[in-house]
Image (cartoon, rainbow, N blue to C red):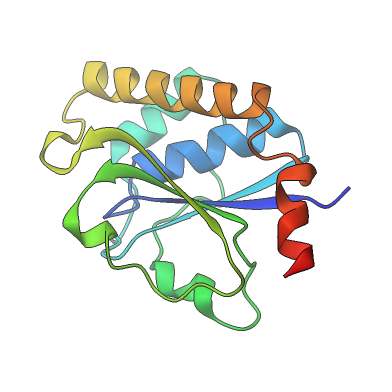
Length: 152
C-alpha cells in the first residue's frame, strides 16, 4: 500500500497545521505521512501548541514552522493532499505543487480568530481531531482515492 502524504497549511505554521501534523501522524500509526507548512512561518511554534499536544499525549519533537515552498523542491516529499486549515487570502496563492495534489479547505478558524488562550486552542484542536477522524473513517486518504493520479 502506498502511503499518502498529507500537507496541512496555515499562514504561520505555528499552531493549526503543526497540531494537525502531529495528530495525523499519531493517529494513522504509519499509514499516512503528515507534514505542515505555511507561507509566512513563525520562528518557532507558539506555546499553546506545546501545551495542547502535551495534554493530548503527543510528542512535539520534530515539529517546527517551515515555509511551504520547501515542498515544491525536487527532493521534498510530494504532497498527495493539501489541506488549508484557515481562511486567509495568503493561502489562496499556493506554490505550484509537483504532481496533482488534491486540495481541501477545512477552515478550522478564520485568519483573525487564531487561538489566543488555552480554551480557544483546545477548541481548535478538537475541531482538527474531529476533521481528521472523519477523513480517516470516510477513507478520504485511501490509496483508492489516489489511483486516478497514477493514470495521469
